[in-house]
Structure formats: structure tokens, C-alpha cells
Image (cartoon, rainbow, N blue to C red):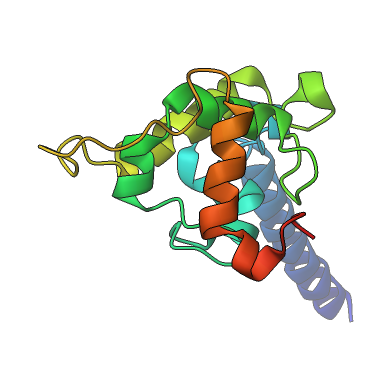
Length: 166
């Protein structure tokens, strides 16, 4: 009986030793180093920023959706980069284009606005798409002429929109 008791005790000691050894080796391991997720204001990757803020309206690859296509080299050759930056930062009043800059109530930093703006032009723009052409400027460079505007409207628009533009 005493011998059986010693064998049982020995077996328990071996099992306990193995369990403790396993526990000790686990404790001595280096801690896992998982990258900590970046705060939203620290994200500066164009693909991530575009996907999270622009793709829903302008399409996953900028080819259009509910709003205009941004992957349009002709549009990007005509529009000024400062205009796109301003639209992205401050939105467009009276449309569904919101302001994204923190300074205008949005969630993006100035650096993130710049990453998106420059990413749009570097990925989808083409410096030579309008070579030899003389496109109109995207924005007016001078005040309009009301008399000439009325003449143009009467000639090209009034037949559909009425003489009062209604």
C-alpha cells in the first residue's frame, strides 16, 4: 500500500512539474507586439482615406457614382488643385458635398485633406491629356456681364427653361 501511495505521489509530482514548466515557459515569452491601431487623425494613406471618405459618392476607383467621377483626366486637367482642396475642405454649399476639414466641422486634418487632394491628381490626372487644346478655365476669372449673360441664356437656355429660368 505504501508503494502504491509513493507511485501516485511521484506521478502527481511529475504532472505538477510539467504543468509548472509549461506555465513558466509561457510566462517567460516575449509579450505579443500587435500594432496598435492608428487614431483616425493619424491615417495618412490615400487609399484608406479615399475609401472611407470619398468612395461612397465618387466610386471605389474614382470612376463616379452618386457624384462626378474624379478619375477623369480631362476634368483634372481643367480644375485647379487648389479648387479641389478647397471643395474637399469646405464642401459645396447647396449640394451633398460636405466639408471634411476639422476647421469646417469635418473630421479630417489639413494633412489628410492634402493627402487626398494630391492623391487624386497623382493617381488619376494626366499632364498631357489636353496638349494642344485651349480649354476654358474651371472658375470664372472675371466678373460676368449681365447683358451678355441674358443674351446667351435667351439663345441657348430659354427654350427649355423659359425666359425667366423657371
